[in-house]
Every structure is written in structure tokens, then in C-alpha cells.
Image (cartoon, rainbow, N blue to C red; front, side, top):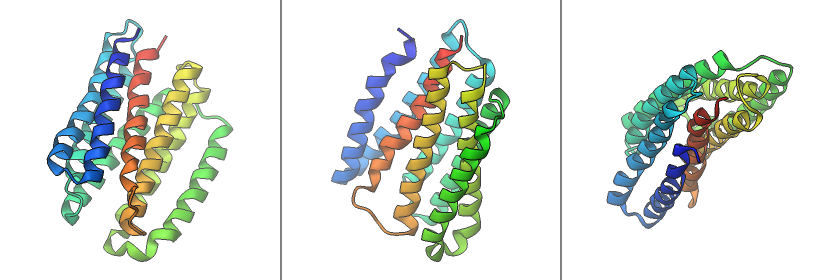
Length: 221
């Protein structure tokens, strides 16, 4: 079994406890479990370097993205503070840029790109119309973020047509990116549209997405 797979149940338990801590308002547990969960995903990415068929471009690119994500996670633990939220947004923007670069480098342009771009554009426009009245001075940063994450997902989908990836491996990348996208939509909707009691379920989508992207690094060759 791939060494990285041993960390999957560890992450599953950590994320379950993390969401539970959020629902119960146990902030101390939340402050410990969130960084721990992200560090676990980083460990999954690092274990891919032990594989004999490792791809350094993918491994290093994803690792850079995860490091930025770790910074974003720490900042967003204090998202009630506007400055912390902005810093977190910026760090996650850089994470998406890192992912976009590596997915573009290893992916392959195909006719499917136009379809995924059209779907993402329609979804982005619809969501923007939903939240635009509450964006205020955050309008430009949020629009830029939406564009960048949409491009990231589009390039993740492009791995499905790339010979550099196995079919299942490319599916992990594409699904992981989509889950990441969904988690951000839930988070943004809760902040800029209307609060949702169960909004922190976004953490399950977020960590599931990050895990799949990191775990894909162990399946080259």
C-alpha cells in the first residue's frame, strides 16, 4: 500500500473532530485541529517523494500550494477580523496560482477545456450576482479570486486528457479541485450572502479536495 494512504484515516478523524469542535464552539480544539489537519495533508504530499516514479514538478508544485494553504488556514481561523480574512484570501489565491501552474505544465489542452470553462463561467457569474450586493470594498479581491480558482479547476480538468497522468490519478486531481471550489463557494456564501448554520461542513469538502490533489502525487507511473 502507498505510504501516503496510512495518513488518510488520520486526516478523516482530525477533520471530523475539527467540524465537531466548530459546531460546539470549542475554539481551542479548533485552533489545534485545523493546522494539524493541513499539516497532515502536507505530509501526504511529502510522502509522494518516496515513490520511485515520483514526478518532481507535480510534487513540488503541490507542496508550494499546500504551504500557502497552511498560511491561509491559519489566517482564516480569525476570519471575523477583516484584515485576517484578506490575508487568508491572498494566501489561498497564491495556492491556486501554484496549482494552476503545475496543472498547466502537466495537463493537455483539449476540446473539453472549452466545456469546463463555459460551465465555470456560468457558475461564477451566477454566484457573483448572488453575493455582489454585500461585497463592498471586497468586490475586486473576490472577483480576482473567483477568476483564479475557476482557471485552477479548468486546468485540473485538463489533466484528464494528459498522458502524464493515469485515468484514476487525473480523476483525483479533477475531483479534488472541484471539491476545493465547492468549499470556497460555501465559505463565500456564508460571509457575503447569508449565514448557514451548517456552513462549516465546507471543511469536509476543503480537506477532501486537498487530500485528493496531494495523494495523486503518489500515483505517477
